[in-house]
Amino acid sequence: MPDQTHATPTVGALPSRTGIDPRGPRFGAGLTAALLATVVVLGGQPAGVALLALAVLLFAVGAVRGAQGSLQGIAFRTFVRPRLAPPAELEDPAPPRFAQVVGLAVTGTGLVLGVLGVGAAVPVAAAVALVAAFLNAAFGFCLGCEVYLLLQRMRTARA
Image (cartoon, rainbow, N blue to C red; front, top):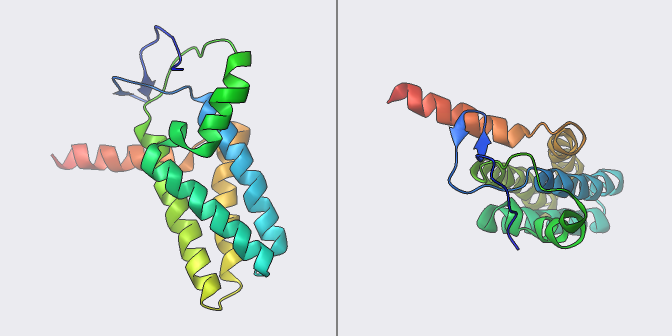
């Protein structure tokens, strides 16, 4: 069920016609951070590679369907959102989707290298993605979203 609010959906100064509850991606980032922390601890062991493959799959779903359509987003909408008050404002879904693409690129690269025998790539890729997920979960700072906005500003400045 979509969130009901009368606030204007925005991210920074970029308005959106539809928006998502900003608490959803933060919740998802917390789940992702826990998964990635486990991968960092396990390293290049088979269990670490398997869990990194799971993270890649989760990022792929988020990249295709958006943060709200990811498994973490569905968990938020099903189990957490009904217990919360409506959000004060909504955010543009494009930056979190871009962040999912960045997470997919980072973890996907680590997974490919890990499968090719570069065991150290698994915990390194997981650690890089973990930093971004932790920043979002703990502080509401979405690194991928900020990169998206920076790229949008650069594109606007060129036009």
